[in-house]
Length: 175
Image 1 (cartoon, rainbow, N blue to C red):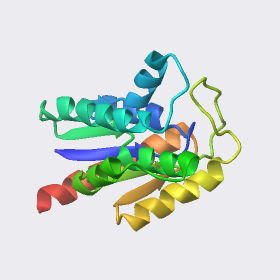
Image 2: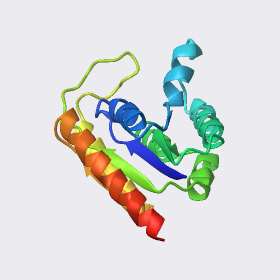
Image 3: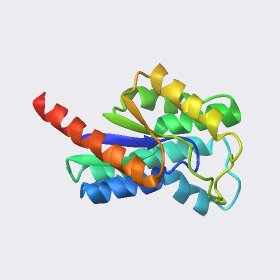
Image 4: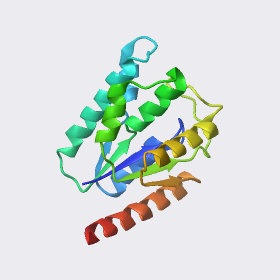
């Protein structure tokens, strides 16, 4: 199974692209567990909630990994939770860091914040998406992750991502 993460700042098209890719490749899509968790929480989240969110994200992935499709598209990973925790609380729970080191993904699509901001009750950062994008990019480099930046219109993003996934599948089958 090839596992692909969609990552990047808020309102950068991750969810839309992930769903489009899963549909195009007739594969599975792992939603962002944080949305479900925060909608059900009934209060403002705190730093400790991030571990529960991380655990829920991993459980969703594990459930869909059992279906053994060729591709799995994940709308976020624990690196995103680390970035957010560091940004908001200036630290990350050790458990999350341990899981980042244990979990492997084949490819990341880093979504650029070059599309219009769309308000959402769960979004917090409309004004610093460019700075956050740089944090995402530098963190992926720090962790030595294989990533491709997707940018432009939603159509351009999808076209780029499909091409990259097709190339990756060919390269993987040659190994």
